[in-house]
Image (cartoon, rainbow, N blue to C red; front, top):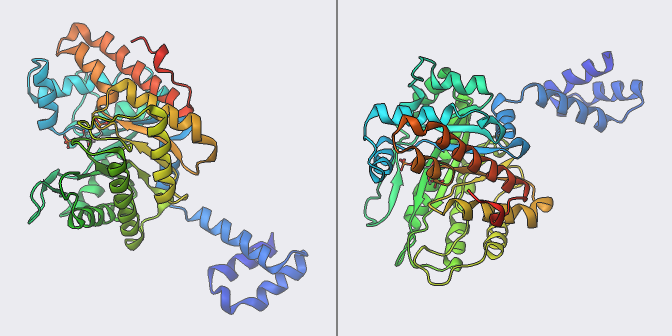
Length: 386
Ligand code: 5MM
């Protein structure tokens, strides 16, 4: 319609200096000037929306979640060692093949986070893992930090590294087919910890990483993990998690990160592993949701919890309880980005033996389905017999 194109040019140039033209258009169509300006603005912003905004909305859509398969070779080897599995690149490839080719994984999983090693590996019949995921309709993600290193002058605390050269690496990952990325910061609770230095340095790195991701067209999954290790109470974990999330969102704002184009991957608010007073799923759910409502802006499309070493069924139960009690009043999707809480039962069955691939895949798919139920608030631990 000519009126619209006239108005569009008004907004595209200088809204403040073109009022007389907008007024003419409004008179002709019978609509108000502000109405036309709004329509034109919406049209323009949709047309120029970066693709990663759509990807961020997709990752947790339909109550699906993320599967983290991004353990570094060192971590993967440690987990293999427990079951006497060979600690080799070949064994890691075979294990990742078991996971990524599990039939029907897409029914519960919207995106998979790979390690760089896996991103460049293929199935034994020569199909690149990235291609396997693309064919299955699962979005490929990649862990892009290079690990948590000792924080100078702060014994017992870590800073995640990997910003040097990150722009170039992200561009390469995008070309290979990745559409989202992940960076994990680690915050330790202890005597006098965490320090302000640890919170600020890690939040700053997460902000820098997230901005670089969006510049490269990738959705940043922002993972500030407050660790479960320690004697601390749930209240302490709540206070620390709240401080960390506030610091992270300040840094994301400072770096002009688009909140509608990211996913937050936080810890649940839990008492420390060695704290004698452990709480019910209902208490954990309510405290965690309240913490997130005080700290996470509504523009963020999704929150995908890490499991952090929780037993698999408990992680599902706690997520389900959050969704059952609060889902209708939350602005963001509450989902999962679990590694151990989805993979562990499968690893225990597989044990490096080809003959166990099918039952291991069944166990993996079962946990993925349980967690999709948890996103709907319908998972019941009492009915989970596997
Ligand atoms: C916290 O770890 C992340 C989520 O896994 P869990 O659900 O098991 O807690 C996970 O993505 C983690 O970042 C990767 O496993 C990479 O770990 P490393 O230590 O090998 O970099």
